Image (cartoon, rainbow, N blue to C red; front, top):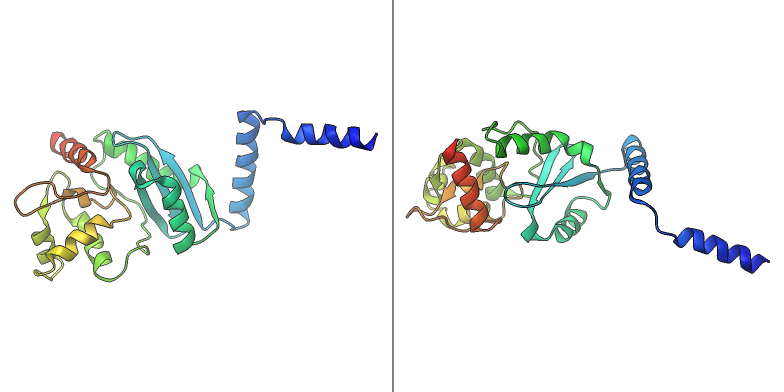
Length: 204
């Protein structure tokens, strides 16, 4: 008799959970974890004209925007290693970021007004990334011009590295930085994505 009860319990536990129930359970987990201050990194994904983007934030602000080609699972693993293991999908924490990105892609926003957590970058890379928003919407600068902007004209290659390792693409507009000869140069989201962003801003 005991074996029958155990089998019934195992069957119930292994039965598939319908999506609505799963969503409700996750919402309860998300609410409880945030209420207890147990979430150090909240994340979500959003659709965009340049593909699905992963957004992640700490209590300080938006810490990561990642393209699908960067492998979102790997990005989350990296955040767990560098920031905290206490990571949870919590879309509401990213509502403002998602809304501002939507407005940007709809050409209704030219400047992002979000708190940013730049702690994934250090030293010269962070210095460059802090200055990238100084390049206006629809404008471009060369790596050399950015090097001059941050007060180190000879650091052209280092500026390129800072752009290539920018943890907040789109929001921190490294796509506005081109090679000195005017060609696109590299981009974390791929050259197609860089082209889309530049054309989007040029058409506004």
